[in-house]
Image (cartoon, rainbow, N blue to C red; front, top):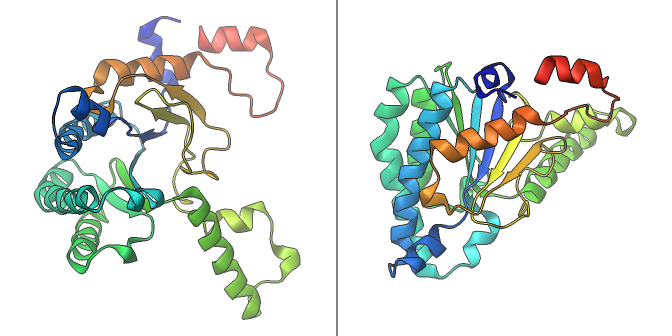
Length: 250
């Protein structure tokens, strides 16, 4: 497929597992937190790329529920970095019409970080450009469990009958249920796994893996992922007429 044709086949919603900050720093003989700081620059590049290519949503896996098991010094440094980035980036979000959201259980964060998150979300809630979701203290299993708990409360209150529970019911309580489905998942760092990320939301997503460590992620690699996405058949279990596929995608 000609690269010039890709603009008509862009995904609406891209999610990225940003892996490799620590290894990037280690390879350069630096502290791990410096790798995370370098990773923030890659976040900027990815967000600008998403804006320029008019994606509806970009979801970034910043801190999983399992990351609390990392050394306490690294976790503390990450929380400090998260606060600093939020405090410094609200103007950027506003200037670029970005709606900012955090998905995950933020109650484990300290009060200052929770306040920064809520402030950034409140200030940008009416923006109608790119939706930027940051997954922080997030896990796909947690997401499903919190949805099930919400449904259980409605059943207990008599609002919902168990026989009414189906896939659409559960979807209403899953994070990002009001956004376009995740079309493409990119993982950097060379690993080929999902790592408890958006387990429900990516059931039919295309996957793209790259060995590039997150601080080195750039527009070229992002564009390669979009080219790969545009070449793939997405029939969602249905049969695709090969002639139609060639006509529409080549």
